[in-house]
Each structure stands twice: as C-alpha cells, then as structure tokens.
Image 1 (tube, rainbow, N blue to C red):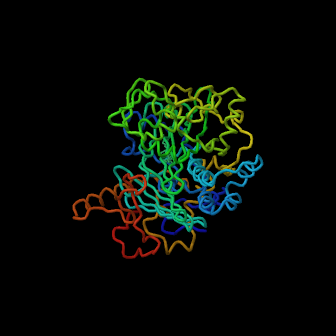
Image 2 (cartoon, rainbow, N blue to C red):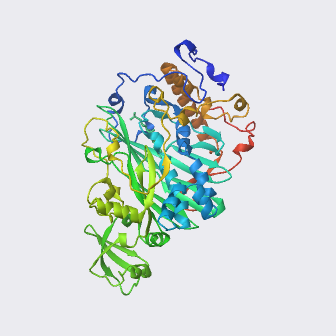
Image 3 (cartoon, rainbow, N blue to C red):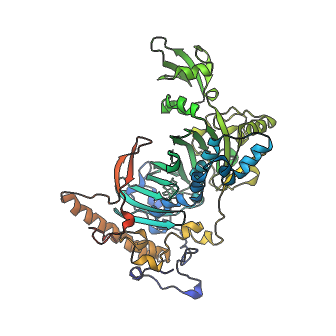
Length: 544
Ligand SMILES: CC(C)CCC[C@@H](C)[C@H]1CC[C@H]2[C@@H]3CC=C4C[C@@H](O)CC[C@]4(C)[C@H]3CC[C@]12C
C-alpha cells in the first residue's frame, strides 16, 4: 500500500531508522507534532460567543484528516447494521445479535418480542458511531468546496461530499446489500469562554430495505473543555432519539449524560426502547413537550374534544392528543390531576453503558428489580436513576457543568453498572498501542488516508486523500502543511469568485438538497453515479 506520487512534493522524506513508515493503514508515517506552547487562547480570545467556522486555526491544532473522513468514522461498527438487517426470523435473530439476549430471556421461560431485538443493534450502532471521539482533540481539516471522499470496505461502500461552504455542510451516503446509511452534518462550533461547544446539526438515516423500515436519529452535542487553561477533554451530551419509520414503529430514547458531580456520570448513556403506542402518543405531542416527564393535565377541552391543556413546571401547553390513548392510561377524565408521561410509555428494554466502552441491554423487569434492590426509583424517564441518584428525572436535557475543575476527569471502573442478565450489544475496540502519539486515532481512523496502488488510477480527483496539506501534516511537516492549507484556501476563494459571476454558480455534484422522506426535514440526498467512475468529463475538479 503506497502513497500517490503527486503529493510527494515538498514532503519530508521518510526515515525508516526513525521508525517512519508509509501509511499502511495501521500507523501513520510519523508521530504527532507536539502542540507545545501554542496557546489556543491566543487564537480564540477574540471569538467569545462567535461561530468558529470562519476562523482559521493554526495547523498544529489539526489532525491529518479532512472532516469528510472523520464523518465516515460513523461507520466503524457497520457490522451492527448488517446484523440488524439479517434478522429474518426469531431464530436467526437469536443467532446473530440477540444471542445472549434471547438466552437470558428463555432461561426464565419468557420470550422477547421480535421487535426489540431488531431495534437493539440499530441503537447500539447509533452510540457506537460516537466512540471514536473519545480523547480526540485534533481539529479535522475543513473540507474544500466540492471535495469528496470515498471508502470501500467489505461491509459497505461510502461516498461523501462537501456540499456547502458557508455554512459548512458535509453529506454522506453508504450502501451495502443489507442497508443504506446516509445523512448530512453541519457542525456548529461556538466558543463559550472556557469551552468550545459543538452542535452537529443534521439527521442520520439508516434504511433496511428488506424490512421496509427506516431509522433516523439526531446527533448529540459535544463540548471541548479547558480551551484556555488545563488539559483539553471532550464530552458528548444530550438526548438522542432513534425513531423507526415503518415496520414495528419502535422508538428509542437515549440520554448522553454530562459528567456531573464527582464525574459520576462520565461517558454514561442510558435509555429505553419504547413501543409503537408510545410513539403514537409522542407524535401527538409537540417537540417541546417530549422532554418532559411529569405533566399536570389542567383541562381537557370538551368542545375541542382532543385539545388538552397541560401544565409543566408552571408553564401551560395546549395540544391535540389522542383521547383514546389518554383513556387507556386512565387519564381520560383527569382534569386537575397529575398525569405522568411515564404511564403512557410502554418500555420494552433498558439500554445502558458508556459510549467509550460498551452498551448493554436488559429487560424492564430486570431493570426495575435492580433499581428496587438499590432503593431507587425506576420510574425516572431517562433511566437516570441507574446512575446512582435517587431521582434522575429530566436529566436528559441538562447541560455540562461550566464550573468544573480544570482537570481531565478519569474514567472510573467503579462507576460502571452491571444489571444481572444483561446482554452485551456492542463493545468498543481497544485503541492501538501507539494511539497517543498518533492523535488518539483508532485503527479505523489510521486507515482512512490509506492509498492502495490500485486506487490511484480510479480515484476521483477531488478525493481527500489527494489533499497535500493533510498529507504534509501526516508526515510531520507542520510549516509545509500550513503553507499548502493557505494556498488551497486562496485557490478556493478565487474559484468561488469566478463561479459566482458565471450563470450556473457552484453546484454539488453527487448530492442534491431535498426533503428527507422520513423526518420531512431538509437534507442532502445522493444523486447516484459516483461509482460509475466517469470522472474524466467532470469540470472544475482541480481543487487541490
Ligand atoms: C478547541 C480546538 C482544539 C478544536 C478541536 C475541536 C474538535 C475536537 C472538534 C471540531 C469539530 C468536531 C466534530 C464536529 C462534528 C461531529 C459529528 C458528531 O456526530 C460527533 C462529533 C463530531 C465528530 C465532532 C467531534 C469534535 C470535533 C472534531
């Protein structure tokens, strides 16, 4: 596996005596350049409260990947998607994903429903996609307009493109015989004084054609702490809602917890898989009410019949709700009484773990028994009770703590929980032993710049692998990388000026803006054609 020759200009030569190796997919050519005394503060001091996408950061803060490549790290655990898709009948399901899950259920003479075993791997996948972010503190290069990246693996093939520059939006589309996985990310970075807040706007969709199902979920927020003093560390937090459209119609509500007091909840994720009835109920509820657990039903309007007036934390909400559902939960004539959303929820499984380590699931009965033994309240909507506090309601909307100390919280095995009879759904692969010298890359990340000889003639000329600045950084030439980065950005500016004057303007090649058929929100959808490999006729491909 070799590098393409074109990018060898200006690159320092490799020195095998120093241990330098070619990028063979398991290591990078040279160890990371120390950030040493470079101060982030000097770059960020004028940016408090600002969006950071327009700010140029010195190359020492970069990692040698383009954001397009980083985005495809979502696919590191793509085998979970295949597992999900392959569950044709209960027996096969037992064999593949839910092996242990089913065994545990059968042992006690109970059989789980078809649906929850199908939902579980998708959910595990949604969490697993974020595992590679742990301790990764390098900033990926902003993709150039029209830059693309492709990745072919036994499990899938994927293509992505930078479809917009301001605001920066990257779109991806992966397919395989078993699933289609696509989405777009618009990362919003905001400097908040002590930390950088990252909101990755956009939705992610997985389609399982065989089952006529599509699963969608949102990305959770991310926070880089201690940007001024202390050591940087990264936290992911917020609510993730995995919705199944079509088929069984299940939903999974997960909470990524902020580290919290004494870092008790560091890296913790938990939540429930909920049945379709709950989903139906929730669809009748406006988004702002979804996060709430305990509601007071103030009044059910007789005339409007389906209009319900609810109060939550002193605020009154009016909305239409399906009366039959209210009735089923005995709240049909409950004016003036308290209704708990929890009583509408039919919870199928409890899912818990740490996004850096593993995700397990167990039955609701096991979860409730476990809570009772510890004297905790199992009714807490987000399952936050499992985190060791008596009542963790509404925890899923909380924010990371800005008054934290400057230290990096250490993962602590003693805060791991293990509910008897749980099933392991997913476990993070350990980082390679040399990871700390190589930007905390996972093995998957190390392979992303890999360039095989056979690729050279086929590769689209806009592929991230051909970016000279990324390659120079990868080889430890920080100054060279900085110079190339500036050159590329200037080149892009000139091209955009010319294109602006032309009648067509700039158009993404492989994706078009459209409405996501499931979320009904604006999204970028794949046009097809990339894998035909007819790149000779493309115009304006000279972006590097
Ligand atoms: C403060 C300095 C050092 C800048 C470093 C910022 C780095 C750590 C930021 C910049 C862009 C960020 C990424 C933006 C978007 C996503 C997609 C989301 O689904 C998972 C997190 C992920 C992948 C973020 C991880 C952290 C990230 C790489």
